[in-house]
View 1 (cartoon, rainbow, N blue to C red):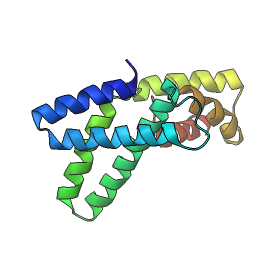
View 2 (cartoon, rainbow, N blue to C red; view 1 turned 90 degrees about the horizontal axis):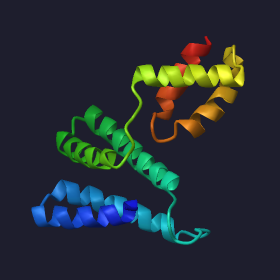
View 3 (cartoon, rainbow, N blue to C red; view 1 turned 90 degrees about the vertical axis):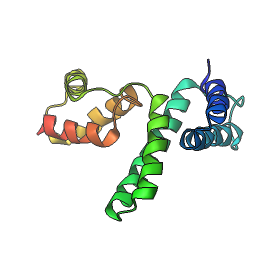
Length: 150
């Protein structure tokens, strides 16, 4: 089932259950999908699975950034809402790699591209961002690549 149809079905369930936080998050995801499908230059009106993952990853990152800001400002009410939305969004994202799995994948990529010094970070990151899109956070990947090449 495509993400859009899954979100529609989950919105109906959340409405029946009167789960307001979940409903708000699902509607935000649906809005992002509709905006992406109807933006200028969109082809066919349907999103590819990799585009759906990019969209969800971006939404999750926005929620994390907002949560960090609310945490520093001691706004527990807003923080709780952002964390609830983030939990719903993460349900639709692929499982994130553990630190050990990520390290192993990055070491394989480093050996494949022949990187050996910190100056080769660009080559590694180019391949890593494509292969690990949606299953690893870009900041974590960057930090680990930097550590492995040092």
